[in-house]
Image (cartoon, rainbow, N blue to C red):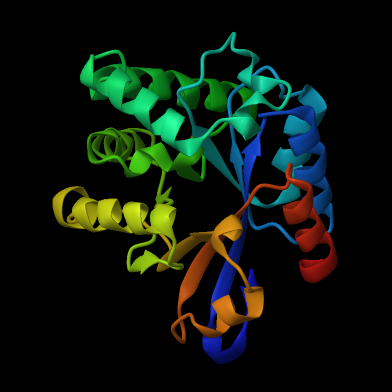
Length: 239
């Protein structure tokens, strides 16, 4: 964890371990350089026994990165997922939910299976929960996530209790969902999260971002080290 000026604590989280071999290599490199605090692990065929042991021995928090990607999809390999437009993904998501293909009950079952697989691979429960493309911010899905967190004794959820720490279109939508979730689903739950949350690719200037955070706050900043520009920042700026 980075402690900046005036007691600002920055949690460095790496997303998408398991989405590709390249992501795994770069995240493990960041762990060895003691830069990364939390790793979000996607259940896929891209998890080798050696990598699992390295993660278990690392001392970092091991979170599960819930997803709705088909197991046999070529999404896991190549760069198709990096080229897909957000609008196209959003439309597909909405249609899948409205038609019942991705109802909250079906998604909850799918995610429970992923958590059980995590337990099988790592010999314990995840330390926290997040999701691919922040789909757990969708209120019906967050309700399912919170129930799963309590069932499996997972104490940390990525959501940012006080706000999303940057202003762009994606963060505005997520912050609107976050506010709905806080009033509807979060209260009375004995779960932890950071004060604020932001993705590195939303941040224009790192120093300005840090200076704009409230004093004595804790912010989780999400990195995707598979992307060269984000890996380079971790390697050169934070290591």
